[in-house]
Image 1 (tube, rainbow, N blue to C red):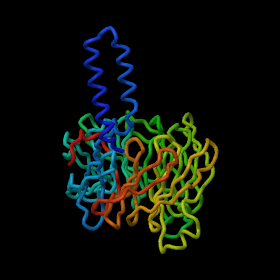
Image 2: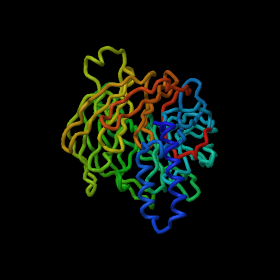
Image 3: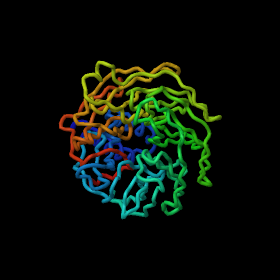
Image 4: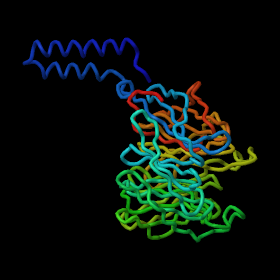
Length: 408
């Protein structure tokens, strides 16, 4: 929320007065410093720490031309119009390099189907570094290791993951394909074969976790980042017929929450960071049976966690809502506290803005991106009036480093 004009005036007045008096009365500098700090402290925090962030949008579908970008004001929740940042096919998912100066995308470019790397310029524009084939068709997801030395794509249709080394210049190297073999076959057609849907690295980077919709669980790999190697380490089974899709670690790293696409539910796993083992706990529904019965189609798509770790958010396609969950003390199930309409259709992706004050929801079928305020006491969402912009078939939202106040 922006500060009131009177507050801004008083803040500038006291800061200026303090600086003048400090020069005239140097021996009292410490007293005046405390007085100035007290005056500044009455100004609401968000007004002093507001940033204009660049938002990159992966797209895929009718009218989509590639990666788009917009500017987001963390004080007001306002989005600028979206503009095309890079023309590329199948740019459905994006991942930021840990250094913040490169962006990687699933891609189809000049006959190469796999992944592409881009350098983020000072004005937020993107310059292609290179594109590399996955070796097993189109990718549904991409992630970059915390070391920044390798990237991974998940091939839903191919039933594999592909590991790409990244050199010091940000170039992707030749991919090494690892085939999945598990399939639960609980749900006909959807689970007759493996379907890796995401790759998430453990907080310490020692393990990679790959939810596999066809296998009803998470394939666990031990990672050697220096050599770019993945070695299968184990498997964490989820609920039968659930269709494991995406997961998020709790901020303390002691648990992760897995979103089951087909049953629209969230399963909690305890995580042992030393051994790389996951123990399944409770499963909670994102939508009740009655809520699902009101729609011709329902499918869970994305899960995100608030920086505080107190709330989780999942998107429901068909019902076109975000389910809000409270994360109670460790060892207890998540608890659904709200269903928030996204003001769009088919929310394949949602994302929290830096600081966790806002949630953005991408309506893939409505070609929209909507903004919702996050209440920092309850975690509940409130739609930002007139908080919608148009983007062709958005299916991924990534916040980059602050844009220095320059809108695209």
